[in-house]
Amino acid sequence: MSSLEWGVTLVGLMVLLLIDFVIVARRPHEPSMKESTLWVLFYVALAVAFGVYVYGKHGGTYGGEFFAGWLTEYSLSIDNLFVFVIIMGRFAVPRQYQQKVLLIGIVIALVLRGAFIAAGAAVVQQFSWVFYIFGAFLVYTAYTLLQHGEDDPDDFKENVMIRWARRVLPLTDKYDGSKITIVAKNGKRLFTPMLIVFLAIGTTDLIFALDSIPAIFGLTKEPYLVFTANVFALMGLRQLYFLLGGLLSRLVYLSVGLAAVLAFIGVKLVLEALATNNLPFINGGEPVGWAPHIPIWLSLTVIIGTLVIATIASLVKSSRDRKISSPRSA
Image 1 (tube, rainbow, N blue to C red):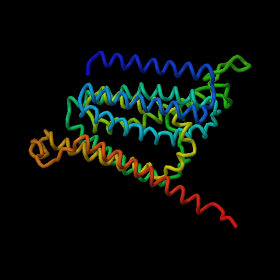
Image 2 (cartoon, helix red, strand yellow; image 1 turned 120 degrees about the vertical axis):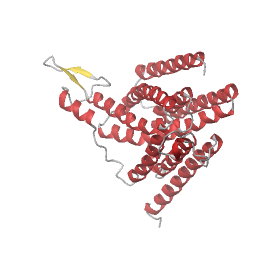
Image 3 (spheres, one colour; image 1 turned 180 degrees about the horizontal axis):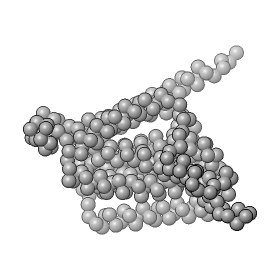
Image 4 (cartoon, rainbow, N blue to C red; image 1 turned 60 degrees about the horizontal axis):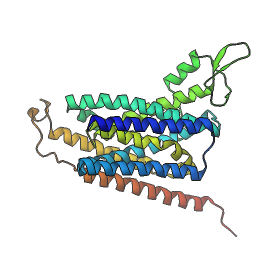
């Protein structure tokens, strides 16, 4: 990808973020269903238009890689929303200020993921054997995701960073709008719970990035596509949070679907590592000839099919459970 494309993309990203900041800062509010729907449709349409551009400019392979990566990252981002809902409830963030929390969390996520992508691209270019590690990690993540699906969804544990902040920083237990700091009556500056919420959102996304970045490198090795897929997956996340709302609790099989996608990509990575093997203790340092190549169209089909099945199965089960639990009419 050319430096011009990189430059235009980064400028466009900054413009979108600036517009978001202006909207949120001027009128803090809980967006309506109509507003959230329009924004989500806008970002989805923007991602599709960008994918069509990549397809037309750089060919079907790169176009397919972008769409596969974007769908995977978008699905994993939806899984993030479960945790975001828990964090907002746990820290009792006022609804009208949740937009700002999510927006700043997305900015933190973009910065962290940008650093991860740069590091990952450098490692992938130098050491092809890293795909063995990425693949094994994704398969393990898929297993833990299945196990997590059986846990209490309200079980949120504060991480080391949050516990450190509570112990070291002077904190107040009251919000003052969306301010991070306030000045107490004695003149001492205190941090509000909003800072803890920002830390919770940012560090949580950092943990999720450990899964999503290896996953997308299993679909494309082009850093530009990895970055843009993450950008488009995250940009509409704030509005999606308000749009889905209670629907999140109905996606009971989303974790199963995501686990299947991650396991598939993990196996794909291992097969690619075998096909380009140069580790001396595997096949004498020679590529493994029987390792099949999984084309991007098949990856895209598996990802879309798995997510569609998981979503439909979730909605069917939720609808059935509601009918069973609701009192029968006389």
